[in-house]
Image 1 (tube, helix red, strand yellow):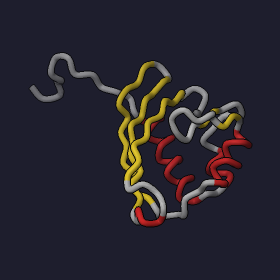
Image 2 (tube, helix red, strand yellow; image 1 turned 180 degrees about the horizontal axis):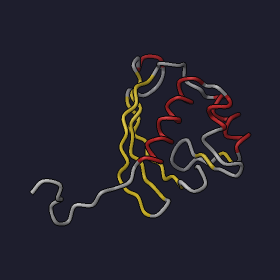
Image 3 (tube, one colour; image 1 turned 60 degrees about the vertical axis):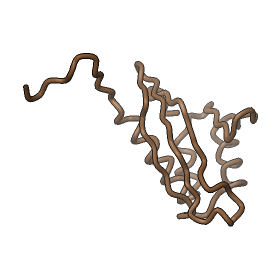
Length: 120
């Protein structure tokens, strides 16, 4: 039965979320202010770790990001979109540092919820 899906299997539209994560990876590796700013809305929020206060607003996010930036090419990323509902998507990812002796963890799990209608 070519072209049919087994009962109970859902197709998830991942395009907008995968696009955002690819732009995130580009920004992480470029540290270019415009690449970072392009990821977030004017009133966006970005939380760098659990329990930390999020950075609020595009300008604060760019400033905070550049204050703790990693060097380009220092990490490898893997990710997948694990859920979508309407214009909300959830991405699970991992950043792996190529040289953990540089003072960072060897591998950092990441998760984010994205709203495709607002671009954050």
